[in-house]
Image (cartoon, rainbow, N blue to C red; front, side, top):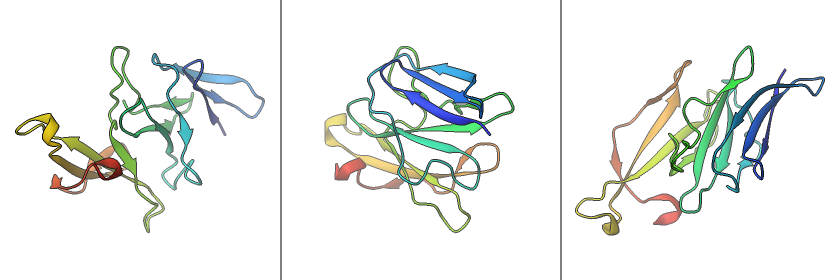
Amino acid sequence: MLALQVDRTQGVAAAIDGTKRVRWVRRVEQVGYAWTFYPRAKRDSSGNIYLRYDPGRYPSVAVFRPTETGFTDLSSLPGKRYYLGRWYNSELLPVGKDGRHRINHHENTCNPMCAAANYRHRIFRWSGTDFVPVSAWQRGMGPRGL
């Protein structure tokens, strides 16, 4: 079984096998983020591994799905030019009855302006191949009670 290791100072996520050989590497362009595994939530019953990262404004979630040769990040890591990943400004919800986590994604609608902090949120669940919405957008507080 492959283990996922993250070196935030080098901006690298790597899959390491039982013999300590690197099988897969993904460089994250923005180094220095506060990358951390969620406590007691490294892997849920779906096999996904969840990491929390914080680019300095909102806590965010990166999801890694094991493959035969390593992991896929399901487009959840930040891009090369910007710190926004798929689950930027999101939080991992506790494991449900099915043994899987859900992701609560927050969004500022910027209506009528961004400073108004008009937040909405939507919950996503693992479908077996990707995360899909399980709720319509709902009005609500942003992360950390903003």
